[in-house]
Length: 169
Image (cartoon, rainbow, N blue to C red; front, side, top):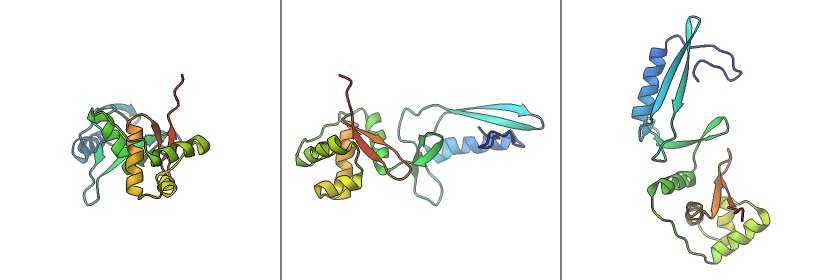
């Protein structure tokens, strides 16, 4: 919603034309792949309130290409958009790739599952330290396990963490 403050006060915008132009530019030129959206305008006195509806993207992740900055992906956590971690971006890409994901069940994975059975959650840094491997390798293992449906990945504002997927059976 554009023209509504966080405290739900309606402040409106002077010209929906300018806002709509900026939205179209962002959706079509700054997002890769481009995102589909629907813009609705509601008059409120001498100003307008704009509601933008964005459909969930089929191809993920959608990256934002800001001139002069590295591209970034964002995900929605409650009422905030936060920058997606490298791991979350890889998981999103794996989920939409259509490829089957496999993983080895070795010593590192055994230690990981024992840890998760006792402590319930782990971060990339904790896993890296637990099994004494690089953070890059720890990240790759965790991403594969999430992509294979063995682990859940949760995004928190400070750090992502992983938990075991629990079946209802």
